[in-house]
Length: 64
View 1 (tube, rainbow, N blue to C red):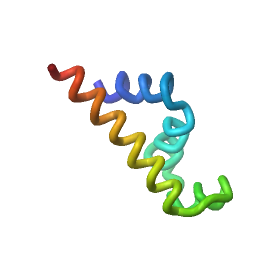
View 2: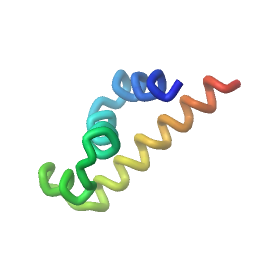
View 3: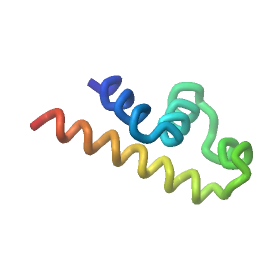
View 4: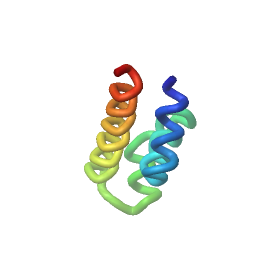
């Protein structure tokens, strides 16, 4: 179920998908991701929050 939700994230929000994979699968810290993207930690945290919100919404839709 989670894989399906993450697949939808990949389809509709590929940049956020890459962030989720880098952080949760590969294990790269948010600070390191921010340094690689040359942006602030806050920006990365907001993108992560958007990605997790998307996944949560898809889970809610699937469960109905």
